[in-house]
Structure formats: structure tokens, C-alpha cells
Length: 73
Image: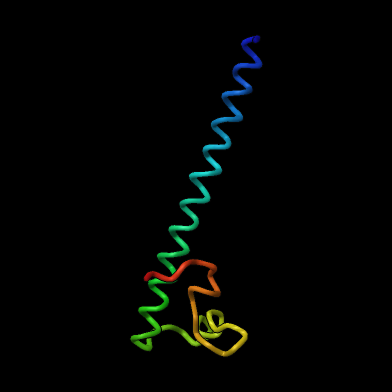
């Protein structure tokens, strides 16, 4: 294998790993945002526009469903 092919393979592996870490970080931040929004809603401190954004089609405030994250057990 030439040096160029080896470097390109390493680059592809690094880029794949970057995408994995980025996706994991996004999921964690979405979960954190969902938790904060839920806590603010319980304290009646969440702005009405965000309440509307986190309300599902059934009219239920469910930030976890609208953000697409799993609710803590």
C-alpha cells in the first residue's frame, strides 16, 4: 500500500470517528436542553413561545418527544 493510500485510509477513519463523537455530543446537548426546558416549565418560567414549540400535536407539553430524546426513567 502506498503512503498516500495509507494516509487517505487514516483520514477516513478519523473523519468517521469525528462524526460519531459529534452525534454523541449533539444527543447529550439535546437531552440537557430537554431537562432544562422541563424544569423551567415546572417553575412556570419557560416563555410561551418555547412552551408552544415543545407542545406536541395532541396539545401535551412533552419536550422529550418533540426533541426526540429518551425521557429519564
